[in-house]
Amino acid sequence: MYFLGIDLGGTKIAAGLVDSSGRLLVKRSIPTKRERPFQEIIKDMAFLAQGLVEEAGLSLAAIQSIGVGSPGTPDVKNGVLLYNNNLGFRNVPLRMEIQRYLPLPVHLDNDANCAALAEGLVGAAKGVSSSVTITLGTGIGSGVIINHQIYGGFNNAAAELGHMVIEVNGEACTCGRRGCWEAYASATALIRQARAAAADHPGSLMLALAEGDPAKITAKTAFDAARQGDAVAFGVVEQYFDYLAVGISNVINIFQPEIIVIGGGISQQGEYLLSALQKRVAQEIYTSNINNLPTTQLKVAVLGNDAGIIGAALLGFTAGQRRGLTLA
Image (cartoon, rainbow, N blue to C red; front, side, top):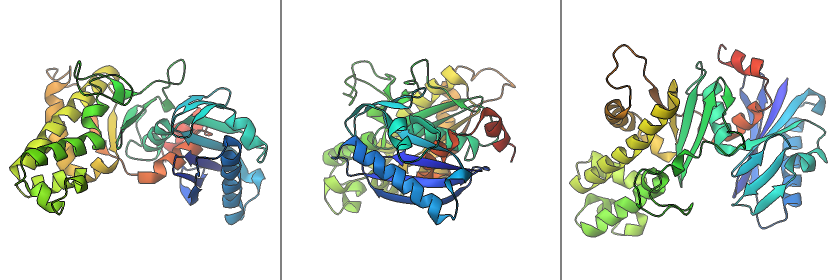
């Protein structure tokens, strides 16, 4: 039994074939060319998926379902993509369009939810029933898994954790509010903070590592300079850890998941990141003074860019199949 997963992005469409153990067998990607009508983009998605089946030497009869992960808000029940800002999609009948080319069951969900499902079932949180995956990138993506299922709220728009406010009347966020966690703890926010600090302290190693060009300062630049003993970079990174820990502590207080998985480019800092967060979070969470109570673990994501594809494919797994995966 096999499942197709499609990760619909603004730049590329990635697709893969997943087996009944949740293992990614083969994957391919093509440019999205997002300026086109949705009918053309979805036709490419279907043909990409069909090509994977042929490449694997299978027939459509061997495929159980197709899953699609997309940014934005889905109507999971009816297979309609209600809103995708990156592509300009509004009320796109994605399931119906794919089924014009591939007569298979089609499942749809938010891409961050799909990544969370993958990490929760076959990735860093494999073996537990509840987890939260937080992806630190341009923004903060997030997905909540409860009892092996995506928690989407009554309208499938839940778990926008990056848009909880941690600073009233704080930094402007792309969502229109002020003080959102995303505005302080995304990779974009760290880059902004590092560039501002380098501008105020031109002798900082961050500027030297960026060849004297503030525009070349990245999140990695801040971490590299901090590790090499630069006081300015160290201050930036420590403040960033504080912002990140506040949001993570809030998530733990709300959901008490067994594991929080941290993904995105920032997660490449590994133990340096985890040790800093664990110390701060241990002091911030509501249960910090309760002895002998199990606490949430923090882990780094392990599936990388494949998480979206695998998670989309896993949308087609039944509840029983998902529980079984955790025991494999």
